[in-house]
Image (cartoon, each protein chain N blue to C red):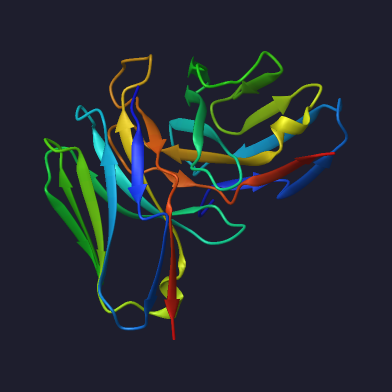
Length: 113
Length: 118
């Protein structure tokens, strides 16, 4: 596709519900990142994939957060038993290998009520 | 741990004015530095990428500079327009726990919210 696509754009979840957020990266981009952006803050790193391999998950805030990219393209970020503090915008970015420019999607705004 | 600071947090200028946004980072061993624009409720739009070996990059009315030794970058916007109103974020690229080629993560500042008044 022309850019990074994320769905849904908005998600309201009841506390304790599981959610799944989807990211379609730019075709051919090897690297994929997930970031979390709280209101009024800059994005914070969650996890990094190179193709289907999750090489860095040091930013995931708890074991309720899980990400996968089984075929090296589309990625899903899953949050189990959502809590109010999970409310944020979740951003996905992709780029080609090397020290190249990262391209971000529009984000998914998650609100836990 | 890399920390990125952006000053000022907010800036309001009249249309047509030239302005400078500042970004500082604590770890000078960066691969590159990227400036983004974020409109309300939207994702990030990449504006400029400066590799660690470069001193500046230009795109239209935008010019970004990088001084690794002092841990600073500036984004210069010439002849500002109301359409430039947005939050501007800088992000420094450092290697993550995986040291493979091209592997890095971005550490962001909190952004500068720019308002250009017509």
